[in-house]
Structures are given as structure tokens and as C-alpha cells.
Length: 425
Image (cartoon, rainbow, N blue to C red; front, side, top):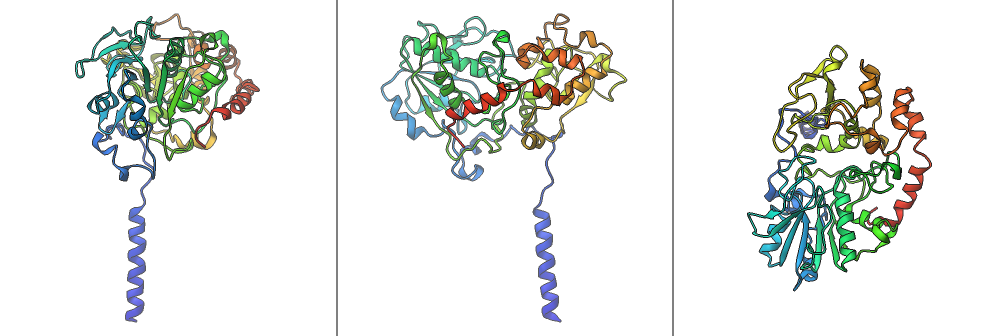
């Protein structure tokens, strides 16, 4: 009996310990600290990383020899990190001769709002000249890179066509190809790299948020996209840029990746990054998509939807995020997607069009739904979706299945073409 009692106690203990080790699926709670606010000093510790995984920037032993005796320009922002420091600060301490810093939208230190032009300046911390590559001066001039031998591009992308950093990459490659300069790309994972979806951009709707014929979710890292720009002859005048890609190690496209640093002020949670390919479409509607709150791209609504939805929020002016949000200081009613299970994107490999369909059907102001003349905060839906028939499809009540059918055969052709440029499985 004593042996049976001991055996029963042992089994019971194992079951309890096993149960205690299980954790329910974590959902975003507004009161929980931002999941990106990790301790920077922990980023470089192997115990906190998947086995063998390292970003391109972390592999200094691979690329520092390439920089020896060279004058370096760096295209960077706050996502450009090596351990607990920006890659600029880290490489300066390692003796790299950085002569210019180039910052994209939001600036090098990331403190400018979306769409705001930034003046050139001297970086206060390093004393290095910082040049803005956003606004009218979006391409390095001959003068800008005359004293640069190698340009380093080290920016975290989120894998979406209308996220402007890949456009900055193209312009940097064009400038360097024009002037015979090399581009060294420190690759980073794509948090939305596990799927490819959306219509391929129609050249008629080319804009500052979409240049090349790729779908909304393109399924490429920055290094892979650079290879595509070269390989498809998409650079200006069909120039070819000399590029070297320092690959991520231990990375696959299907690997979940939570960014250690916010990629931009309004993508401030892991939830927002995974929702962004879908919810950024609301920038082309007369709806507030969370700008003016601490939850951009995870909530959406408008004052005129009162009585249609219970959830509400009030946009306010927030410096560095959104100073003049749509419907500022007005109560908006709509959808709260902060607890939406983003694993659905991984399962379906699809954008979610049901939300824009639902909100259009519920709107008592259908004539204004896609009217970008009502506010400077509203863009055209065509520039975001990338094709000309989506607006009418929503108005006509087309199903998601019918809308998706119109994306073919372009989407399938892109998927096939993409395979030529993959650096990772």
C-alpha cells in the first residue's frame, strides 16, 4: 500500500506541475505594458533568442572587415540596433568611420510624426551630419554621398507594400547605383513574412506609399526585396546596384518574430504590426483607425456609427504620433481589435476584408465612406489597396471571395516570381 500511495503522490505531483507550466494564449490587454518595451541589454543574450538566430546587424564579425578604411553612410532609424545600442552608436565605438546618417520617415531617432517632413541636422549624440530622406528630399543627392564609399541600410521593415521604408531602400539603391557606390544591407526578419496576399499594385496607382508591382503583403525581407529590385530591373533607368546582404542566421519566413523595438511611432505593439496589413486600408476611408490613441491600427470607428457599435474611443492630439487625428476630441464608435486572435492570419494566410465590408454596410453615410476630400487625414483607397475596382466592389456588396478572385492571376504570378529572390526557406 505504501508503494501505491507513493506512486499516486508522484503521478499527482507531475500532473500538477505540468498543468502549472501551461500558459493560456496571451491576449493584448490595454493595461499590460507594451510588449516591445523589453530591456535592451537582454536583446543580445543567446538565452533570450531562438537557437542560432542572429540578425544581420549582430554579425559584426562578418561585415566589419568590409568597412575597414572606408567612409560609411548609414540609413537607419530606432530599429537599427546591435544589443542595447543603435547600430550607429555601436559601430562608432568600434571605430567605424561613419560620415553621414540618413533617416527615413519619422527620422533617425524616430521622434517625428507620420508624413511630417524633417530638416537635415547634426545628430546631437554622435556629431555626425544627419540627412532626412523623407519629403521632397527623398533620394540622396550626388553631394550627399560624394564622401561615402559604402552605404549601410539597416532598418526593420514589416513586410507591407505601403510601409515606406522599402521605398527608401529603392531610392538609396538608385542613388548608389548612379554614383558607383556599394550598399551593404543588414537584414532583419519580416514579422509578416509568413504569408503573401493582396492585389498586385496597378502602375496607375503608383504613389509615395506604393512604387512597385507587389501585393500588399509581399513576403520578403529587406535583403530579398533588394535582390528583387535589381533582378526585375525596377531601379530607375534599369540600373543595377552592387549589394551585399548580411543574412539573418537561424531564420525562416514562417518563424514568429516579435520586434524588440517599435518600427515606427504608430506601430507600437505586436498586435498592431500583425493587424497593420489589413487595418491600414482604413486610411483610405472616412474612419479613424486608432490615430490619436495609444492603439493605432487596432481600433477603428467614427462618430456617425453611434448606435451601430457599442465600443467607443475618443482621438486626442498626441505629439510624435498624431497631432491632428481624424475626429479629434469626438467620440467614435466601431470595432475593437486589440484582442483579435492574430494567429488567424497565420492559419488563413489572408488579409481580413470582413471588417471593411462590415463597417461599410453599417455606415449611414455610405456616400462619404471613401471620400478623401472630407479631411486631409483621409487618403485614397486606391493608393492603399493598389487597384481601381476595390471601392466599387465594396459599394456593390461583393463578397470577400469575389473580391479575392479579382486579384488573380497577378497574385499567383508574383508568388512564383518571388521564389527567385528568397534567401530563407
